[in-house]
Image (tube, rainbow, N blue to C red; front, side, top):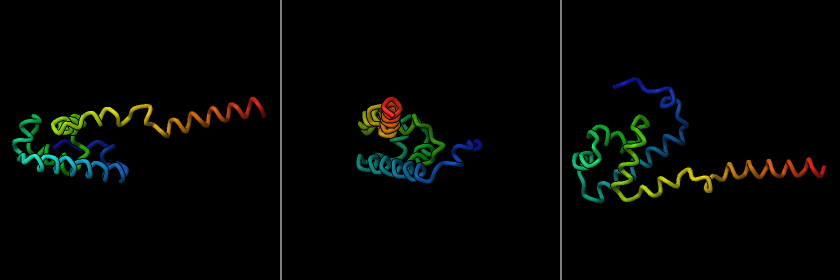
Length: 108
């Protein structure tokens, strides 16, 4: 197996937990559909070890593999919304601070 990228080794713990939860959810979705690892992997065009790694939340598995699993489950629409600008509350808060500070400088 290739050497893991430094970014994989330094994942924030909350990111690792999120990947593990996502992988578990994808595994449960596959099982609820009564699909074996082998048949699901075939449908996803990945190896069984790759699918197994994804279901464990392995960060070395590509985003495309996770996205394909979501697509098979009919959930890829949610993927499109994850980083939508209108859902980025942190950026909105930063923009509001800039606007508020600019107003204070004009009136201050």
